[in-house]
Every structure is written in structure tokens, then in C-alpha cells.
Image (cartoon, rainbow, N blue to C red; front, side, top):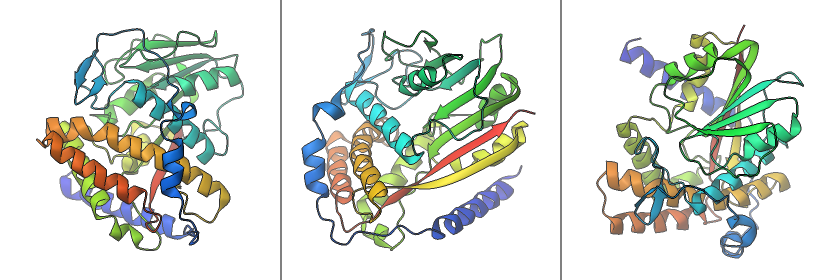
Length: 343
């Protein structure tokens, strides 16, 4: 495919996204003014900071954060306790966004083998294993930060899903969440997934599309958030693992051979500003997660890739956090859930 065709296709998908999001605008609660107090009372509390301990100490330390040692440099996010807490909070957010479900793909009730790519703390894999005792669930990650206590049908392996997969037996379901910024070659990854699925097996991808939007044009007020987001996307693209790829994944799954490929886009509000009570709750959690994410994503990308000084980074993070917590700015981020079946 020539660059012009690829660019035109991306523009078409962005237009389709805009049309989809415009169909159901989020309503703001104009009386809401407690984002700062909500954040201040919950961030740092035990319920949000409980993390899963790592058993290996051979890590790289940089910018006051800890990073993985296996395949060092392949991933720009930290793996320390603060980041593990954010991962677990993000799992809760996705569970709320999916109305209590772990996936949307119509998989069989009794899958036998399941693979969770980029498992992080392993919380999705463990929950899935608990719900499906018939399944052997394997979670892989670059960091061995998963707990030692697991369901008997769940195991974790330190591995790089971008390398050749070693599995001899195929899977019934492959799950991958929040892999934006982690994949250098989408086509190769989806091809490997196709190869390692049983006929009738499913893959499901869950990921945010890195654009901070609003339905009332208040996103235009978040100038530092937009500057940060644009620089972050640019930096990770230069690193070789695009952050904004989710918008292309449906088409790429189809090109890899998957059929019945479905896609849903859901709005994830940032802050407690929505009128809808469920979205308000979701937004309060996402505000905390988004601020933690800014603290996690920014240091390595902006220092290693973009050449910013630590002082410049800290000033920008402070400005970004302030805008995220501004209740008059009604930001949300589109979340893609995409699934397809191997014929």
C-alpha cells in the first residue's frame, strides 16, 4: 500500500470515528465542582495504592522510576509499584466500561486455552481463570510483576509477544489490552495470533485511541493536555511503536485473515463531570488513572526520545494535571474494543 492510500484510509477512519462519537454526546453536570477534592482524597489511599509485589530486583532505574530488565528498552513505561497500582485501577475502569464483562467477543463458554498478551499485573488473566475453570490461561509480559498466588489454571511467563511465539498447541481466545505504544509491527503480531488460534477461536483487542476530545468544544481549553498528547504520540512514533494505532486495527485484523470482525467505540470521560451517574463514577476513576498515566508515560518518552530536561518535564506534567482536574473541561478519550474470529 502506498503512503497516500494509507493516509487517506486513516483520514476516512478518523471521519468515521467523529461521526460515531457525535451520535451520542456526553452531557456535563454543570453543578459538578469537586474533581480536585475527589482526587485529593483518593490518590495515595490504600485502596488505590495496593500493588502486586515483584520477586525480581534486576531492574533499570531512571527518572525516579523503575523499568523492566528483560529486553531492556523495548517498552517505555515503568513497572514499579506505582505503575502496577495504575494497571489494576485501569482494569477496574475497563470492567466498568464493559459493564462487568472481561471481553465482548462471543467465545465459547468452556474455552480450553487462553493467552493474555502484555498481561501486566495479571489481574485480567486471573479474573478470567476464576470465571472459566476449564481454561488454561497463560499471561505473558516483559516484567515478572505478577503475584505468586494465582488460580491453579493460570500461569505467567516472561516473554516478548513481538518475538516468535513458542507455543505448540493453539488457543481458543487471545486477549490483548492497552497495547498501544507497545507494537512495532501490527501485521506480524496479528499474523502470529491468527496462526496460533484454533479454527473458530477469537482475538480481542482493547485500547484507547490517543485523542482527548469533548462534545462541547471545551477540549480546546486544554491546551497543555493537547500539547502533551501530540508530543507523546510523536515521541512514541519515533521510538517505533505508535500510540495511535487502534483506529487501524479492525482493517488489519481483516487483512490478517480474521472474519466477522466487529468494533465498538466507547467514550471514557476524564473527571466526574458527566450527568449520567455511571459515567460520573467511571470518570472519577479515569481522572486518577489519567493523572497517574501522565506521570508514567512522560519521563522516559520525553527524556530519552524527545530530549527534554527533567525540569521541563515536571513543569509540563504539573500543567497537564491541572487541566485534567479542571471540571469546566469535559474531556473524554475513545476506547476501541475490536474482536474477530479465525475461520
